[in-house]
Amino acid sequence: MTTQNNNVNPNVPVVIDNLVSLGTLQAVKPVELVSGASEMAKELAKIIDKQHLYTVISGKKFVNVEGWTTLAVMLGCVAREISTVENDGVYIAEVELVRLSDGFRIGKASAECGEESPWSKRAKYARRSMAQTRATSKACRLAFSWIMQLAGYEVTPAEEMQTTEATQLNIISSYQLISLNRKISDYGLDINRVIKWVNTAWNVNLESLTHDMYNSLMQRIEKWAAQEYAKSEAISGLHTQYEQQFEPALKYANIRG
View (spheres, rainbow, N blue to C red):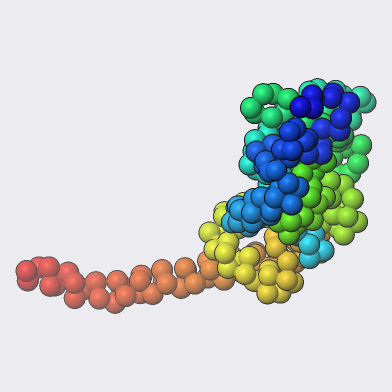
């Protein structure tokens, strides 16, 4: 029987008495482990697609941290913060992945936030939180990226893309997305119709709007809201006109009654 060696890379399957084990996945042969991972990947993809736990960038799907932590839990692991430190406005977070069964650390990662735009201008709590989020998704990626690829997604977490390709592609920020959703709600518009229009017009989701698309859509939302208001006023005017026209007859009918 082989004993555990602390110098062994924790991110690769461990063989004990011919048993290949990675989290909750266990098999006698590596091919069986891959087969089990493929089945898990199918179930994972269903959850990610149904809950929309990804961001589309340049036509590709990059999984958000919630999707990565879902995969970790399916494998019997959770992310746990080790530390978060701040240096001249930049937050550096370190996160580890541990097995739920025995608390054994299977991997860890660090990430930072605060120096790049637009985060350098945001509140401290937001920078701290994003550093922790990036470290969490990165730790999951280092351990389980091959399973995420089996599920059909890009292996770079969406949070990491927000500091690289997303910035280069001029994608709107999360705050702009929140502002957009709030405006749609405040004007009483059907968000599903807005999403369908955006997809038809530009073949993207709301999360993948460029700044030019965002500005154009905001103007269009103002126009749609004005049209809906005009319709409402027209209907209200018809009701008023109807009441004024038939009010004498209605009063006479009430008197006769």
